[in-house]
Length: 371
Image (cartoon, rainbow, N blue to C red):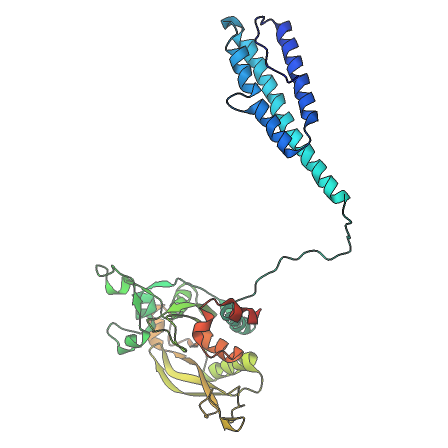
């Protein structure tokens, strides 16, 4: 017969001991009778339900009904029973779950020689993979890596890089400015950085020569997206400042880097260009990796180099002495060079991709090719 909580009239210690003994005996019997999870749920609710569970009935029939002087002893006894009922209910569930698991495994053969189930891992995005490869080339040359904020001030993005206010070269940057900056001085207004060159300024401000650093990161320009342009892209820029650094050091460094990235047969050539923060400045071309610099591929003009045999890849130059004035370097004692390359442009060449937008559309069919 199921256990029911008796209504006590005798609240002596002996009577309480006897009632508690009967309750715990019933608890043990009902616990042993539980054979499934559904049985356990009914068992749990019978003993611990808030409205009509046995624990709740103990409060109503024993504690509240006890005379005033005896409430303390009855309350202690009810709390002792609670500390035994709750663990018993939990142990009952653990018992039936363990029994179910053991029964399942007993009917199976476990071959411990089989390989484990490996969790599938993703792969680096082709842009990140290319950027890490470029950075790795310069790390092997002794360069350190520095990063900086994507939201920059006008001072670091332009002024400290020898772009004075109203300089026409600013127009080519297609800058995205942060709204609500009109009340600030022009040099303190915030924008999305258009190149990672501000990281070079920040590095020189906190580091005295010699400096050899590469600065990878995301940059932003107000470009309409098409096959060769994107409003968000990535750059790796480099800076070397020391005594007696010459243009020959710049050419040797970039020639080595291009050979490391595209193969030892690749040739480089430099031709004059203009950047406000370098003087002299140059654009760098590599011999076309698709037609081996011949301008002809499969009997037809090479489309990748437009039959010229050369592909423009990056810009570089000797650091303009005016830049040293913003970082408290002595332009009469040090010299240096800087360079910058677009990661997407190099990834397009390395992987034969014909549309830069494919890198940003998140199409898993495209990305799986680089896993």
